[in-house]
Length: 246
Image 1 (cartoon, rainbow, N blue to C red):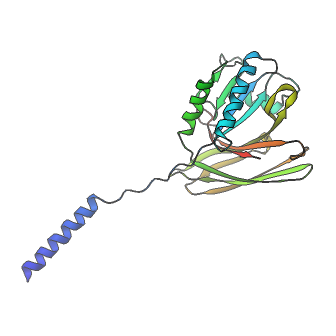
Image 2 (cartoon, rainbow, N blue to C red; image 1 turned 180 degrees about the vertical axis):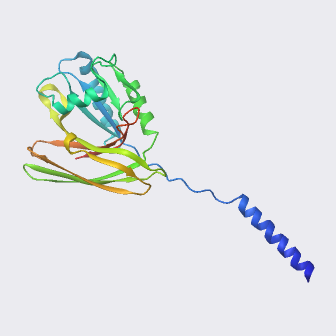
Image 3 (spheres, rainbow, N blue to C red; image 1 turned 135 degrees about the horizontal axis):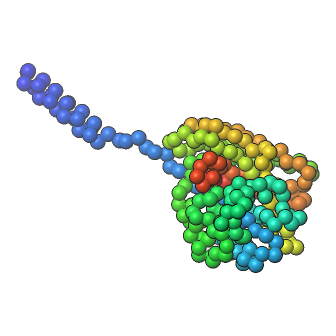
């Protein structure tokens, strides 16, 4: 009897060791699908800008807004330039920098060795593909409520990663087509004064935001927008996620 009990204890102990050696490691959450925000800083009358614009606009059609959002920001002090656009360009690429060319094409901030000057279709596409392959740590949900003079964009951001994210900004832009100068995604407002600061977002945390825009009719003026989450203190001022607003 004692011998059987000893055998049972040994078998149980071996089973415990076996289970311990092959225990299932913690499952890392899957990254969310990323939407790449491409910012084209350009000038009216710029020859190279006129060459890259149709390439970028073609890529928007190919990828769709669930993978890519394009914004075109005029920085040559034309009537289509705004103080927010100029300040954002200076923030990315300070005056006097040797990288301050027109056009400048940025991919999720200054990721993927952004392009200053002309680039062909394949070069631009490869950079978008490289960003898409990274996935995202953030999910954005949005809703829009508009009347003839006021639009409210509200939503949430959720941390779907396994790490705490810190020092984030929730910002946005609105844009519309300007047929007279062939700009399909011309930015006329950035939510710089309303941007929301998020000091810390732990895994599975959800943070609510809201923007109120006035002075235009979203539907009648054929306006679209984008909300994005950016890490302004990161080396590339990285945009972690974007969401198209129809």
